Length: 514
Image (cartoon, rainbow, N blue to C red; front, side):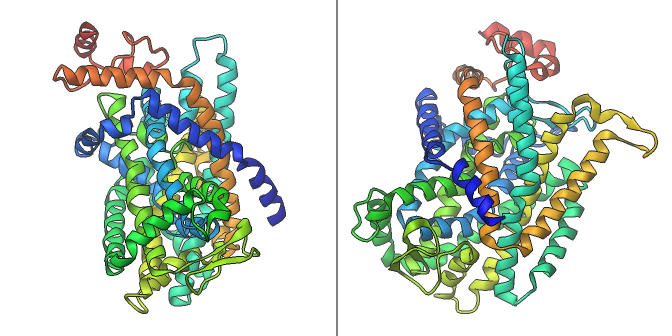
């Protein structure tokens, strides 16, 4: 199984996917006139605006749902493995993919809002790549092709979020707790299943409520405690930054030979962590109750900064400033040791242990427990977010058939398949917790890569509605208005939610301003 997974992973994560992710980020940055720089103050302002409704959640809750998917083991174990296999330069490429990816995230999340719809079973907002891939081109001769493409993405997302990716989170959590408290992995798995079952059965509102409470707490606590360690090693920071930059471009005498691995691992782990372009962010973005799609697009772009520039950077500086890592050439644990900064081997199995070792340099004996608790929050919320995305795409695949009743079972098709998905993801969590870390990470990388390939190609084709929405938002802001979205005068077709939900006086006013 391991050989098969590695073969598939090498095919999915070829150099072409790395180039595609970086090129898409550069292109969207230029097309949006660097929206990720120009609108940072607006991003922060919008975090506190927006109210939830019976069908949708608030902007902040949608951000929290998105961050619950972004902020996970990738922020700790992912950063550690990127540095282990790619050298300190991998951190630079994680920053690069975050900066460029913020524009990509704006495009995909704005599209998610434009083409969202109501769940015929629950009435809640649903959206994501499958929805905008099928709706944006529904009026063209290529409608059938894009419907098939959307169905493929939905099926891949159900597979990735329901089976392949949860195991990475549960494995890192199990490894961390086993190291901290000598708890058997199967015990951790049982505990996760109990907590997850309670939350995911409650639906999107319970998921959003859970995420809006847990995510801010866990992120702030982790950053603050980590910064204490970093500041205690403040004298090392200038040298760390210099080493990160120099090794990113092959200028460092020690790490210059693995510059290609620095790019590969930095981009791979950067996308795994911040999810820009992967197509996961639009699911949460679509659930928000906002008056204009660009609002949530800006909020979700800021989520990329929170994830990588804040949390991942904190982990990276913690590991590098304390020397709690080793780097191997060849990208595998069997490679030649070319730099020894600590006492740990470079393998996915010890990913969480890098951060634990770093904490122990200042708080001996505390690091293992703190990282274990942090990962417990990080991983649980991420798995919950994965479930929400898988469920959303399952709803897309089923369409109106989700409301069909099954008299014999006294339930609907939607309810029955939802229960099956819940069982599937709980089983995936158990399997991931007890399997090897290398297998769990490889399976997770395959899921991320497949979604990224499909989504980035899709948004490169469908970008225009998002860019039109950005121009419309900026125009209304210049007029001193609170932007209200009307797709009709913008020539955006297929955004049926927006043409049917806005009060007539709002639509008339918006159209009169164009």
